[in-house]
Image (cartoon, rainbow, N blue to C red; front, side):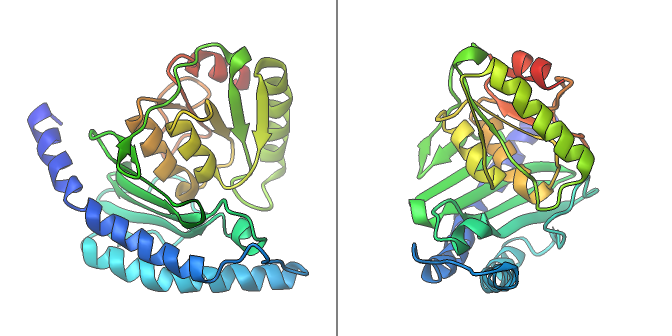
Length: 270
């Protein structure tokens, strides 16, 4: 894609931004109406029922709005899907990202929606209702929090870095759990502080905003990574795999960090 074509495409995608923000805001407001810091669940059956109810309520608002915004784009129905989507445009959304936190009365949850074109994220919006935050990015146009530009931190010393990881989904495969636990052990020797929380998007927006310095993950779930990947890229960060090459939907693992930390993070995880 030449510079002129890229500029035209960015302009076209930017025209979707207001509608995209409106869609995630409306869906997030549905979840906010269902939210209380007193929320609790008693057992697994109640947890699964609450997860389903939240997903259904938010998706009923989000999906029609996105399909109206970009009717030609297909819908990624597999919330835990991984790998490439194929040619053309796709909506990849999580109508209740961090659903388990919402259900337990925590604040780290929201709604995400990303338009993917030929397996590349081109525009995204992340609305975190309980925190009053809206993150947006258009490919080639920068990353923003509540309309103000954001950028990743300037750190290049891993020994001074705040880093994090987490499960991509419940019931990770044994080999993914081994990779994750081993990587945490190595990173505890290398970084200043290491966290392990869910969901991925809530960690990635903090990397994009410069509040933390890196996030990595071995389990690959599209809906948990695409929005944050675009935000970090547009906030002048590095999004790579553990070999150090640019991350794609077919990569086996994922790192989002500052350019100065990318080589050392990849070396520790590799």
